[in-house]
Image (cartoon, rainbow, N blue to C red; front, side):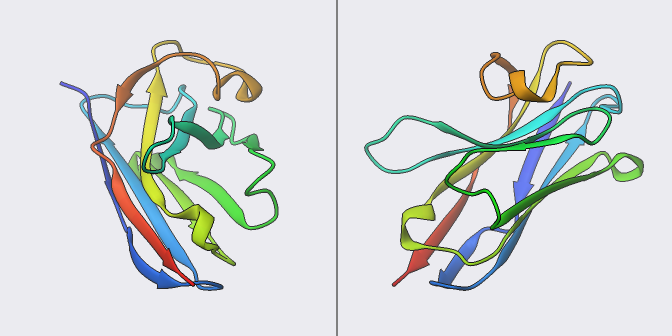
Length: 126
């Protein structure tokens, strides 16, 4: 049984930082890319950042330069370091894993995810 568990969300003031974690269990994801997505109230889920199996990264324009995605294969965990947070970053953040290994990083934002975590709330106050 594959499970993804996000953690690290919370309430932070604008300009602050948070680090989200996504711990995967049930199998090894060394050959899989992983992505972070978010969904704000009343909006559709949107792509935030992705990291390929080889640690190539890709970001949405809205977070480029502020967010950094990384992975630790030994811990089967992906991180999202978020700096210079803005109120518009407020959302539930989800991590996802596609069904196929070796997905090109630029495709991780558009291919269907086979597995999702339960989400972690990030609230940025102005």
